[in-house]
Image 1 (tube, helix red, strand yellow):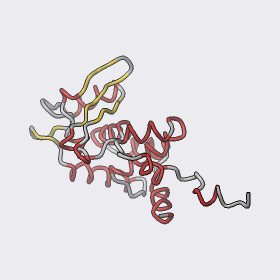
Image 2: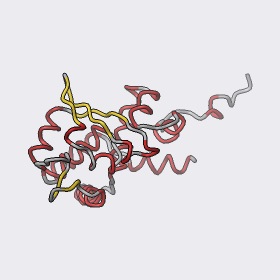
Image 3: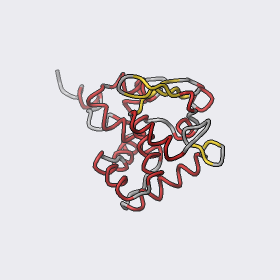
Image 4: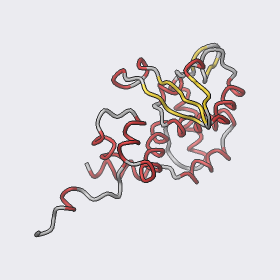
Length: 179
């Protein structure tokens, strides 16, 4: 529905907004936001990343998102910058999980609260899902619908199109002429 798309569009963060958040929040929150944005992972996928799910490769880190934490139990792979990966390990010092607190994976509720508070500092309401949405909205023009859909783990490209092709005309708009 058009109203839903407009709502998501208003919530979207541009890269300048994300950089502003980085300047306003603490280092642990900043790196959590950076990982969520770079990977476009759902919050439950991100907080449950295990260190052995991360493989350093040329130019970045390939991260396996486990099926048990994903929608529809679908395992997929995402990427993050090597510098980001090293910084998370340095700040969180996990033995098993990338985001580890007291020997356990950070809870999605803790991640949500940290991100909400960071957004308040720049007078924006944000959540982990807004970061996912923002990545997709900011990258769809460069990567294309099929690639973004696959990266997000959507079962159908129409889901991606519905939420992330904000400025694209509808079929009715395109076919509305007389010829």
